[in-house]
Length: 142
Image (cartoon, rainbow, N blue to C red; front, side):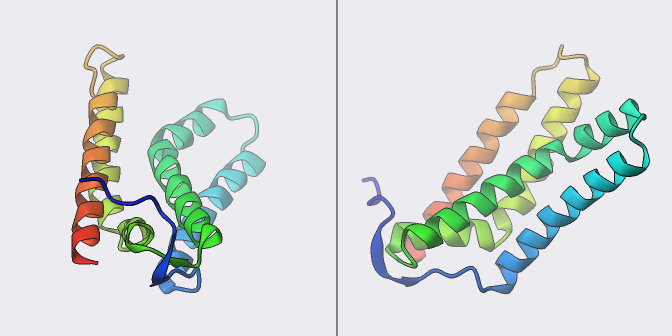
């Protein structure tokens, strides 16, 4: 049985939470760090590449999380159980805590092995399965 699509319901979804503020602040910090590195070391290509290599996975996850939460709140501030489960999956932080390190390791192994050990895409699949698992926990418990 698949859950209903996100829509109107009785669960209040808001951006005015400490969890969302923290998520946005971390994303903002990474962006400020990138700007500062570029502004102070504009000619240092290796430094910029190193930063992007190190933070690329984090930025991808954070951008996805912020976009999903903003989209859910904008779509319907009073969402159904599916909306609430997606919202909690991101803002609880559990998915980030498990998925980011897994994909970072997969990315690093593949990069350092000069792409001879293909771990990046399998690690993304694992992160997606973790997302679905945590989502299901909130969906059933919601």
